[in-house]
Image (cartoon, rainbow, N blue to C red; front, side):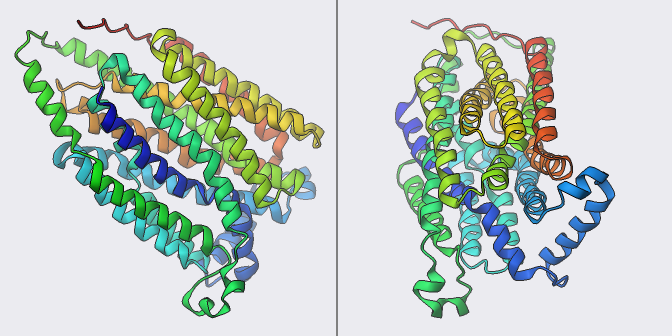
Length: 458
């Protein structure tokens, strides 16, 4: 394992996800800001969306929902689901192509190209005083974000199967640290309203949420400089290693072996999509649940997400990175989906009681376990199916498709979860989520094969 390259990838990915997570605790109040500014004006995209929400409201609402659930806050839940789904759906569309391009021109060049789009997206957010501009920022960001999948491909280039989970766990640790610091950073920066500090900036498009967007822009700019200075082209390193390995006698994979790899990869793709469909939907509604039940402020949302991030980071670094190969990636995936089931059960009980901080943080802890285990180990299992024996199994292509399927789950998960939450309330939403995660658990047990442990080389 090339530890130097892995460290560079980890640092760059951490900067990227920090920039991405800055917005998370702000989303409910950011959408509320746009709504207060543009509601009733159907000439804007937001006005048309809110009009569509009102029509959808009366199409799906039961008599109970019409009486109890049709509140302004719940309209924001549904609108937030649309915004979250749009970004992931665009990632679903472009991820296979980003992976394929990286196989052709190299990981480093592809990563720098995607960073151009990220910078443009964040500049648009800085000046997104209207919802239309904010939506364009999300569209550009969704079409250009490639750091996560390319980081996974780079780590797969420089690690063998024995160290793969250890290396890929750093991707999860980067997520966990970013989810600890990023939301709190975003909530803190949102307290600095540039329109009050310098009212003259308003005419240039600056608005109350420009400060956190500026911080995200600085983080991404530092990331680009860091990548240009320290990240080598790893696809070349892999090719050199393969050229050296050709001197050794290696078995040629038969069509049956290739078919088995593809079959296993398709199973992992499906489970990845189904898991993230449920988990991302439930996770996305969490900030709206606390906003709905406890009227959480940006800072309180940041603390909750920070708690999840800290716990997830400890689990990634203290357990997954050290024990994945010994315990088995499938077993850790299973532990994660069981934890998610328990977390959703806690949130269901919270929605019934409506006043228990113990249930909120118990559920958040189980979510942290899920966040720290499932996706990183599924990714490791998927990377083990990659091979140069077939173009469909090339690392960039195969892992791009794997990420694409996950993003498909992330695209529809928030939208469906927010729709159920909005129409029937949090009890039904999290109750159904619990049942669905039990199905995911059964699927993992039944269909994921346990990988054979690689033998240590002398």
